[in-house]
Image 1 (cartoon, rainbow, N blue to C red):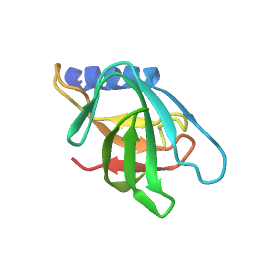
Image 2 (image 1 turned 180 degrees about the horizontal axis):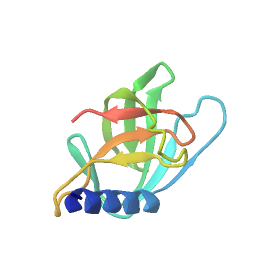
Image 3 (image 1 turned 90 degrees about the horizontal axis):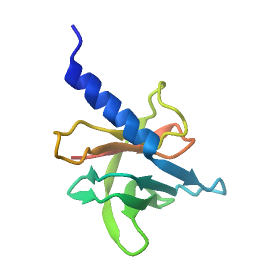
Length: 124
């Protein structure tokens, strides 16, 4: 039997992921990705309004600390866990979304650096 709620949530997550535009500089050890969201999404303790954000690690020696900001403000800084990119996930996809109720912003469960195989799993 098909769980239609899971199918709808999966389709919604896939649609949002397709709307996310990302770019990364391929120089040196730059971990920064610029992502644009067409609707609100959530990180632990904060909801990001629709808009453009930079996802980055705090430094080359603090890869477990992720910083999310826009041009004027840091929205999130926190520890993350290391997670392997799923084999079925495109190397150009930057985020994985979790489930949310109809009126809630979907949580970003992990950020994968574009082109990379390892991601940063957010701790809720």
